[in-house]
Length: 607
Image (cartoon, rainbow, N blue to C red; front, side, top):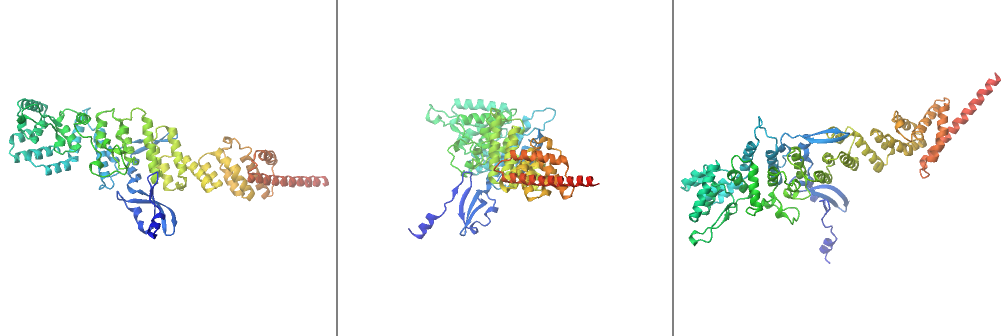
């Protein structure tokens, strides 16, 4: 084996972790600056695992998976209030599109997402109509303007590729550019058709008249003399934007082939839907009529299924999707949600319909919360389970990215208060080492912005002090700040107080005992715990000041110490040693007291 082969055999191969991370070995210089890049295809170095022999084992993620920044607008628009001691969020956006993060506008995924938010806003924002007027008309007009802008570039390409004036006219009509269509027809000297096109979609009567005219021409075999583009324009004038029916079983010169207008002239699904919106439905119809017409055509295979944006643009997904041909553009999903309240919201919001990775559920979650806030859509059956499953998935994604604080915000959207509280507390405990001081940014964000009860944070820090720092005194302080007095007393009695007695750190003992003032009635084991240590501390203080010990204090200690000895675990040597130390001190005080009493009696006898 050559040196090169041996080196390759012994090298560490890059491999994917189960959570979407890439583990690989490299030198630091080869990756200098990679963590700061922000392009769609760059890697973000998130953790340095091992350093050895000039190499580093790195963990990396694609930078486009970082989702925390995209939540900033939504967090600002969310009102959080305490209900039964548990934070409960409610979203109040001015418009749905205001939730969009508006970052990296050159990224194709972000460009499409912006369109999604704009369409959602058009379809589901509260309409600003006055005096109870119908909102259908203004909403339809707004959608028409949006859709014309959406297909403008595609229509321009279609015009550029068209060979005849009639084909150019069809391409222009697919972008709702009626004046341009008339111009192309006039340039081709087709004055009659240009005149008719100038009135396209203006009224239902003209559509009816054109349908009757087409039927007459069909029966008279006149249509066979028309070129396909002219036939298609007449069909559009009649309100038919799908199939131009042919004719067979007639002499060869009268035969016509059937064709789908969008397929014949190279229109994408957005242009095809635009034809229904602008020319097929009545001016009085709601836009949902155009959605239903197009959906029927897709169902009957007269139109192609609306492809996802990345397939349409030839951008490969980050996984092998066996069902990619069944995925539908999220824009189309929103239209279906508006047109039919029975549409499966969960199916529409699947990340496969809008994301290169099925594990990136950020947009799915944000859009679901925005749509649900309008009260115009719902998950239907098992709504709570579906909504919570998406919430947990997104929270896990954020935690995996290192955005545990934003994950806390997401977990607040769990439906049931008890489940919500448990999930948030668990998340705080897992990231207790990152909570920081009380006046720090994280603590302030949790308590002020997210309205997390401070007790939850202190409980998490108490667990961190116990499990990681092994600092029992700090654990007690955290539990006291959390108001968990029984738990604090338990740790105090078994760990902190015995250590303080043995080390004779009576100042710490006094400091912690003072924090229990007024709460001893809430602690079941106070009599054989804190009260005994409190009595011992008083005994020590009086001895320091050379004052005689009070009988009630000695009685508490004489009665309490044997009981504490019985309750103490034999394995807890520190507690046993502390009890012995306190017992020894009590015995000395009692001997000293007895001697003082004998001296006092002797003096009285002599006098």
